[in-house]
Image (cartoon, rainbow, N blue to C red; front, side):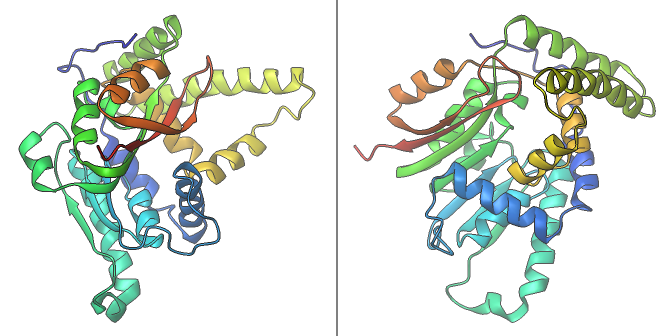
Length: 291
């Protein structure tokens, strides 16, 4: 069951969070993002640029980190984001990338990287981008206020035989409703109080995690888990907490609520990572059938 939200509710300033995170992007984080993308898309680990010659659409590019990862794997990338500051973040990272390569980009075979300030829900604008070999949207489509429509629009950009990789918040039932209330609480507060609110909520949950680790005979300190999070997608623990606690609009879905509609649209599931009954994103990779 998908939990609907009011599209007119408060929207989190994702771009401000990504602007802060962009200062932490370094070679190590880029390498971790590349490894994450390789694993999700089941790419050949022995091939240096397995996406060479492919078109890659990054919907909700945020900091631009995973657009850069796709470029590093050889793809030509189109990044889109509705948030103005996220758009600027991606463009800044793109410009730094271009500056670092210099004249190498003049080669005819060099991958291109275009950045657009566009909503996935803008049908005409999305259609104008054409179709892609890979459409990627991690943790974004559930923040549009119209998740099902956003998934449909993303799927429309996948060419025959292409791949659709998305991550969507898991439906926890009552747990998801409680998180929705926590997120609303964030937006009721003045901006200068919000970091304290994030620290308080995150602190409560980090304490619960510490107790759970101790109960399993593990070191209760969080540092190993924080390192794991960074190695998973190259992300920052603090910026992830801010994104999670403040992120509105907010919709969730069970795995079958994502898989079955896309199956009816001609997509075959190729990879699946779920969080079980927990909170966080389920990851789906589909291949579009050619017929």
